[in-house]
Structures are given as C-alpha cells and as structure tokens.
Length: 276
Ligand SMILES: Cc1cc2nc3c(=O)[nH]c(=O)nc-3n(C[C@H](O)[C@H](O)[C@H](O)COP(=O)(O)OP(=O)(O)OC[C@H]3O[C@@H](n4cnc5c(N)ncnc54)[C@H](O)[C@@H]3O)c2cc1C
Image (cartoon, rainbow, N blue to C red):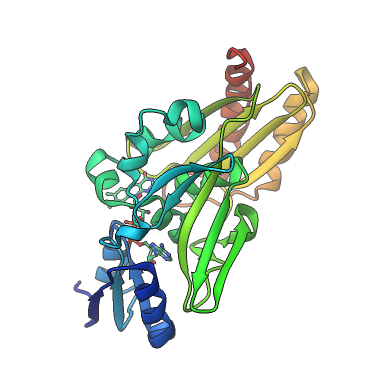
C-alpha cells in the first residue's frame, strides 16, 4: 500500500515546530527518523494531513549531561547517543541496550525521542527510561511540562502527548553510585523487536526488574534484597501480574517463562558485577 496524501513541512527550529503543531492541531504529526512512522503511513495506520519534519532542527539535536541526567534532544539519532565515548560510564544500561535495537542503519536515522514517543511495548528505549525512572519533557506553544516515564507511557503506542505537543527531550538519570545493571532479551532474530526484554538494576538495598514486550507498556518492580525461594516467588508473582498475551510470535506461557528465567539470570548477573 501507499500512504494517503499529506502535506510536508520541514521545520528549522523547536519554536517553528510548536507553532506549526498549534496551527494544524490533530491533523499534524511529527516526522523524526521516519523508521516507524513511514511503515505506519504505508499501511495507513496513520493518516495525518500534515507531516512536520524535525530532523534538521539544530536546536533539538543535542546530547548533554545536565544536573545528573543525560539529556537527549528530539533530533538526536540513536547512533549519536550509542557512539558517545562516555556512555558506558554515564548511563550503563543505555550502553547495554543499543546493540539490540534493530541494525545500525536504523539507528543512524531513528531518534531516541521518536522511539519513546512511538511507545512500542517491545522497544528497548522506553524500557530503559522506565527502568531508570527517567523524564520526558513535552513542549507546546503554551509551555513545557515534565513527566516521569511511568506517567508518560499509557498503553500500547499510547502516551501522554497531547495535540500540539512535541517530545522536546528525554532525560536518563546518570549511573547511581554502587548500582549494577544487566540487560537481556529474546527475539526471533537479532535486531527484531523483543518477545520479552528485561533490565535488572541491583543496589545495596534493592533489586529492580523492568520487563518489556509482555504487558502493553514496560513494567517495573522493586524489591528489597531478596534471595533464594523468596526471590523466585517474587519474580513468579511479577510474571503473572504482567498478564501476558499470546500472539503469532509467542504464547503467554512462554513469555512468563522468559520473565522467570531471564529475571533470575539477570539479577544474578547484575549482583555479580563489581560495584563502582
Ligand atoms: C526494520 C526495523 C526494525 C526495528 N527494530 C527495532 C527494535 O528492535 N527495537 C526498537 O526499539 N525499535 C526498532 N525499530 C524502530 C526504530 O527504533 C525507530 O527509529 C523508532 O521506534 C522511532 O524513531 P524515529 O525517530 O524513526 O521516529 P518516527 O518514525 O519518525 O516517528 C515515530 C512516531 O513517533 C512520533 N514522534 C517522533 N518523534 C517525536 C517527537 N519528538 N515528539 C512527538 N512525537 C514524535 C511520530 O509522529 C510517530 O508517530 C525498528 C525499525 C525498523 C524499520
């Protein structure tokens, strides 16, 4: 299929983008890297009258550390973050997940904010943002608002973005002193969307597990430093709480199995890592 007809405008700045969104309302959609949107246009899952291309907005193309967070602007590609020499020291979990996001050609075009705005339940970047309790900055003509990840993600491909708003930037907290991180996923082939993806964060006082690809959005659980049968039981309860669904890729039972198995393994992996 081909997309239905639309108008296209290339914005040069964040200010011009929010002005265009204010003028065109629900008729307009942001085009960032186009790596998810073009497919949605082609199958007519999205039929906007107007596309506002933000990929050349230089004032949205930044990756910087500010107030204990890695701040990523809406035009920054996934590759520009992945290739940052200091990423492993700044946000170790992000450094672990980038190789799992499709292939480098996609990461060269796709943006971090676009992946967050798209909110695919299997996508790795929304999972990281949830695991680290990062923030999303929404900007419109009326001003800005800042939401925590669990306020932002509201369901499968559903977020708190309102007509007229752009995800201006996302903010990932920098590595927490003493925290250890691990990530793993299972997919049909390397680079495919995950059947289940998990991130573990272990500190001296707590264990956190975040699961993507199973519920309609990433889900995070925090426990004290449980071990043995107590930990097994807690992970099993979490696997059931996620209310996994069967689809063409995997059964609900297999997804629960992955949560239990990968959850246990990842917590052990993170715990065994040297504390920094
Ligand atoms: C073959 C293939 C394999 C892929 N595999 C994976 C994978 O394994 N894991 C994974 O996570 N992703 C995968 N992706 C998706 C990829 O990561 C996308 O780049 C990403 O999901 C969307 O980013 P984008 O910049 O391309 O956004 P676009 O495609 O331009 O936009 C996606 C949606 O978000 C909206 N949007 C974009 N930016 C903003 C913004 N700043 N503010 C408000 N709304 C905005 C758009 O209007 C649109 O609705 C794959 C893509 C392809 C083509």
